[in-house]
Image 1 (tube, rainbow, N blue to C red):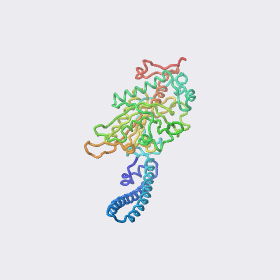
Image 2: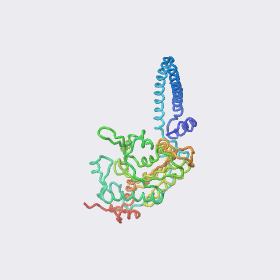
Image 3: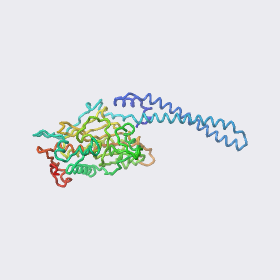
Length: 432
């Protein structure tokens, strides 16, 4: 969300940010609406002052036994004009709010320019993809052949883009989540949080999912009416909104939160993409990281968060690459994003498994989340927010299945996960 004062003071900078995003400059049209709004607001305030003065004059004249008919007539005329201007002011406020709430964040200066994912910049590669002596299978082929992954019964229950996991794979999903949380809490100082899976409109607006991405969300119903709640697309929504409407002390920052939750996405714009397997589902598990910082901490916190996500992949022995997303590919709220892409031999490709973004004050303005620099009576300023996958649990499970598969169709368990698996070192065909 943008501050109108920023657009008034730096229209060229605002437009340049939009152009880097592939959008048309909008400062002129926004400032025209802003000028109309301020003109009407000034007129409204003048009339309200006149109304207040008339009320005083009316009371004085009446107490003195004078004729108040002229004052009454004036009051009625002003009342009508105030009502008219209030409608105009509210209408323009709503129009400005709608425009500003649907505009993406301004890219950071160090965010690479580009139009699409083809223009993203690879920063580094870690690990060497395994050379197989056989043709590696996709995870869905492996899972079904082992009797541990069931898309047919999931479709019977819920339709497409769902899965049922059994036995070892179900335990592996749980083991991965616990493993990730242990790393983030014990090694990187994130506070583990259990959060609601249902949130209100305001929470989704605060983190930028509403109103622009409503079609990608699941809304709950009670009877035939909307319940006022939505299923979270990521625990970033709940974790970031923990500080909504608050003024924090600088000494509290940075705040670091992590949570494992199911996540729910309608994937409205993903028709035809990854229709098989677990890569793109309506329900999936994810360990999320959220940081609330001062402006001075933000850049370093972004690198630190990315390192936390990388540590998970390194400990699992999964080859991956770090990619800086270009201006045409970063998310709506982000000013800069690093994606971690894990190697999937079954697809012979790198696929996203984590996305770590810094959002400057974009979400904080929508949530009205602030801190008081230096404490005391200093004027509150907006915090900076960051979020990152630490990592997507389902995709980590997919990556382990494909990278650790054996020629007989079994799947070896990475050494670091064996204690979380109760000593199990290999997943083999399920015995019915």
